[in-house]
Amino acid sequence: MCGKPKFCSDSLFRQRVTYKLAVLTHKVRTTATLTYLSELVQTHAPPRALRSSDAPMLVVPRIHTELARRAFSIAAPSTWNSLPADIRLCENMLTFKRHLKTHLFKLT
Image (cartoon, rainbow, N blue to C red; front, side):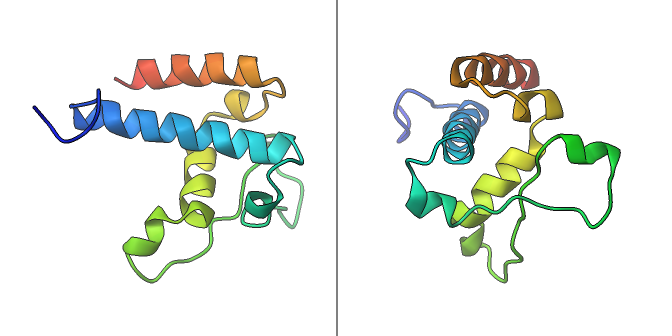
């Protein structure tokens, strides 16, 4: 038996963390309810128009330690930016979750 609840495999555990973090980041971006978290996440504004600027990217602050990589202000933008553009463009939460689950299952 492993110490992680329900998810003994490392890849499944990481996918669960990715899923939770991506859903929370989507909530922060689409609703105004989580103001304390929305202050930690900033939308990237490129200096000129690019094809990739259609899909919203987030600013990933620079870090100096490995421990800082776990902070929400670092992990959320990193996770969000790693998602495909069609998932990041979803406005509806149910659609976002469905596409995210499909994407994560394809990665296994």
